[in-house]
Length: 77
Image (cartoon, rainbow, N blue to C red; front, side, top):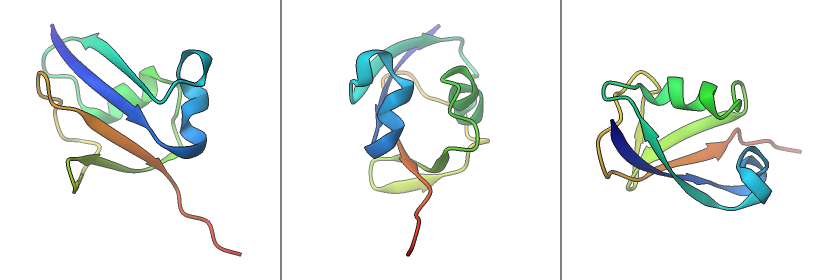
C-alpha cells in the first residue's frame, strides 16, 4: 500500500467527505491516477491532474507520499 494526499480544487471538493479540500488515502501500489478518480466517483468531472505544477496523464501511476491535485474542466461563457 502507498499513501497519497489528494487535493480537490473548486467544485470537485464535493467528492470528498464533508467537502474538505484534501484527504490522505491509502491505495494499492501501482494504482493509476485515473483509478483514483474512479474511486472518488469523480469520473468525467476531473479536467486536469497535476503533481506539483506539472500536469500528468490519468494513466500515470501514483507514487507514495506525492500529493496529487485535481482540477475541474474549464468552462467559458
